[in-house]
Length: 48
Image (spheres, one colour):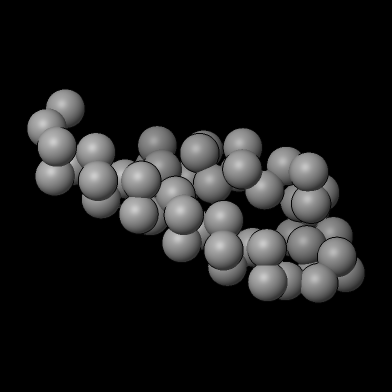
């Protein structure tokens, strides 16, 4: 994987984590995401 692709993946991961982290616990619950799972959900979203 080249440097630019790695950087873009990292940036997308951080953006996803930040967006989910801004949500309330209720909003996350409505999506079926536990606050403790935010990073693993963000990692999984990068694979799409």
